Image (cartoon, rainbow, N blue to C red; front, side, top):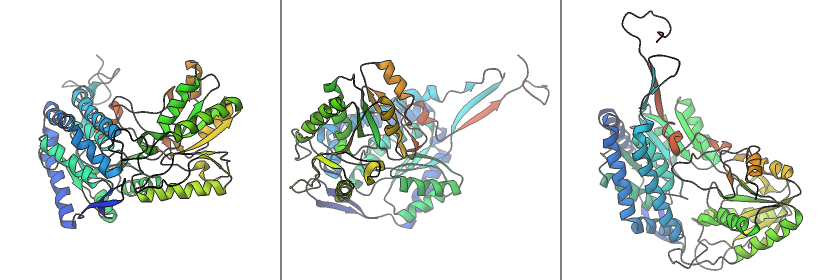
Length: 467
């Protein structure tokens, strides 16, 4: 595994970083464990909050610097990069401000003297992807550092500059050595870290294959894990939905971050043939209007894919869809310019036996379906191994709620594409993984909710004492 910065807009290799030696890796794990045991877990929550708030403030002060790392390293449009920096700062501030309330002991009604105390469990290993290099980390670091755990962070090999920038962020904010540690480590090294008894939990955002391998290894060591895997999110448009706003939602849901979102709207499902024709025409017009260019320039509306590997995978999927009988309504080809650009693509007439029918399309490619009824729309929405997010567009909000109850997913948004915020729990079902991040739910994934049951001196040895 080579940690390397390659500019996706040009294909130019900018820097290569050395992997940690086994001795360096051992020192990092030992330092994290020592810091947790002797320092971080014992600090008052207010002291931890001061450091996390300082990190958020530094992100805002240096927003342009941090945003430029994203644009240079994984090709994110500069406006979207600035938005990611701001969202990451918001998440850190959210947990710095909310953790004291979330960590307060809770009494158990009906059992006098019984309380639940929230305590940290130790060193957490986080394995994070390249598509949102700051946001994905913030939604783990915010809650876990505030609860008193410490983090070992193994980032994706194509965003090492962003990974180092985050490590500097927490150091400059005042976190002691061992609270947040960046690891440039290989697959086998990470496997040994997962099994290390000093590491008490593992969280992964990535592919099904990576998640299954990590969950298996963590399970053999009896360690808690959280898995945030992929998605093939449906966006359902009912006959009564306002056409323009539904089209705008579909374009945003599919093309944000060049379509490289786990929770992106990858399957557009329109109810009604007449509405379907109008919607496809409008979607193709909007996709064709996007223009490739320097992602750091404000006028660019089509960013490159993050890597040539990602580009080639999508080209293979498009060709497989063609051979399987799908119609390419627009796009389908590599853009004729340097860098890893793909034309915005819409695949229509994707039949159930088409290879891409159940695959995740991780980039600027949408699968478009027209159905005759909302019942058929629900069946199609659920005809996937994934279950991360979904959207329903309709003029009747209560009708949207009713459909939401039938969709097999962790999140449903009505009249919006799926999105994220610090206060909204994020996670899925089926092959999209298990566990939740963000909101209070994210804070409680790696904790010991310890029962403390108090009875007065002289109480009998059985059962609670009546009030």
